[in-house]
Amino acid sequence: MKTVPHRTVGRFTLYWHILKDLEQEQTHVYSHFLASKARLTAAQVRRDLMVLGYSGTPARGYDVRKLLDHIEAFLFPSTEQRIAIAGVGNIGRALLKFFAGRQPMLRIAASFEVNPEKYDRMVLGCPCYSIDNAGSVIRELGITVGIIAVPDKEAQFVANLFVAAGIKGIINFARTPLQAPPDVYVEDIDLARSMDKVAYFARQSLKSDSMMISKESHK
Amino acid sequence: MKTVPHRTVGRFTLYWHILKDLEQEQTHVYSHFLASKARLTAAQVRRDLMVLGYSGTPARGYDVRKLLDHIEAFLFPSTEQRIAIAGVGNIGRALLKFFAGRQPMLRIAASFEVNPEKYDRMVLGCPCYSIDNAGSVIRELGITVGIIAVPDKEAQFVANLFVAAGIKGIINFARTPLQAPPDVYVEDIDLARSMDKVAYFARQSLKSDSMMISKESHK
Image (tube, rainbow over all chains, first blue to last red; front, side, top):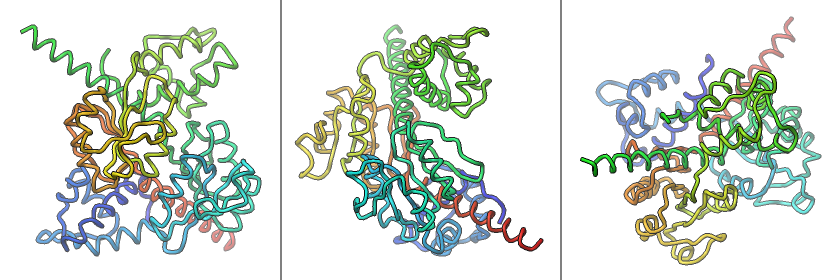
């Protein structure tokens, strides 16, 4: 199968989620219904689903269960894939709880900390190791995905440890844009940036409201 | 000032963060230095900063403090802007801690819950109200930004409450794509989608590694 763009893979996880909800209620679904639920066009949905090599029929649309099977075969690992998380502060702990048992084949198998009060024990059901042992733990457990939830200044250091130990995908919650080799996929989740953006656009929206009101009052 | 694209606003918060670190060490900075820190091109950085109506000099680059002032005037509210958060589960609580005092002019002023054991008391320093009172609390406190950290099935219901009460910007942590009017800016942060994507690309990267190795061994 040829390389699938990042955004397409993102949409597959969205379709999967929508279809899981639908599965209880109906056996078939049309592309335009999926599209409206996903806030996309029906053409986009059909183009994406063609990547899976599965197509529906004009009369009944897609078979929900078959479509789920195809998406799952594409998207989910067939054997357990292991994840490590660096940093078990507020965000790290929330993620440990959030991802626990969400997807059986994706398991957070280790966490790492610099703080000796936190490591060498279980944290929320997950073993926590000293960051000094990250390399050997990652290699021993065959971990391929790393989550970075450490303070900004330590993020690149942790990313380097992860990459050196063979990790190929990183979710980065630090604000530091990471340097990583091209064969390592990095997804940044910058909560502060999202907040600044949303707050900015909320103010702009209020300003244009009040300009419209003042124009009205001058009529 | 004309409308600034979402991505540009996102980059301003990144520049701000990089410049805050730099401020301790140097008084001036060149666009190509900022670009390398932000993993962008120097041309992109210069184009963005022109939006602020501030330019550096070819000899010394940008004055770090002046550039910070311009970004802050653009990006940050001049009077307190208030935020509400719906849902004080794992993610909600982590966000309450993460955003507390991060930016003095952006304050989480209220949280909402359906669970009577959680509301009508302080949660992590923030008053928590019944979701039934969301409309009146949001209007009374003049809240303009809402964070949705409730289960997926309740997300649209909460978004409707937020919009009806006058909220103009939403950060959505639920997987449900929200329906909202065009004057309300919605930023989705879908942790499960990010995880599925990163895990997928990590597997693809390992597959192409092992294909290269098997090709090598056949030489």
